[in-house]
Image 1 (cartoon, one colour):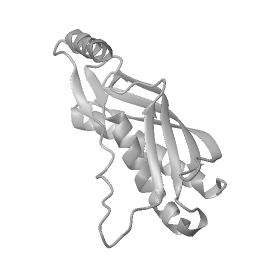
Image 2 (cartoon, one colour):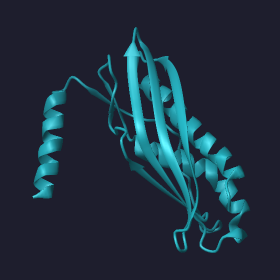
Image 3 (cartoon, rainbow, N blue to C red):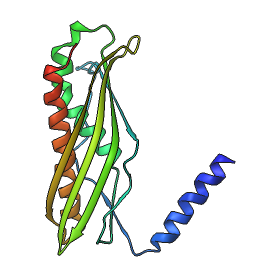
Length: 175
């Protein structure tokens, strides 16, 4: 029954869009590459949507921002890898960051796009899932949205700011 409801919801949503919306994948840089020479970084990044929207319709525009969860995970992974590497010996098994998209908003007015994202970040140990710290981080970015590429870049700047701020927060978080 659940798969049927899910497909019904997705089908209704796509029918509502009716071809008038344009899907815009968010740009947040290339994925982090882990090679055999470099062991995996001891940081698990779990991203979820808990109150925000992904895909995110843009009020006043035909754009729908997509892949926010993936972009946030990549940005956080890139900004926290050096910290996790530097503190590798401090925690057996490493750390886990749960990043929840709790609020999202995108609006366009007179070809100017504003994107706002709020996330809740919880730091735990991998072994035993011991709670260490929690914070909330917000980003806001704006710019022109004449093209889908420009809209994606605005959202990408917001996501990159989230990653940067979460990486900075880790410096003062308990280990």
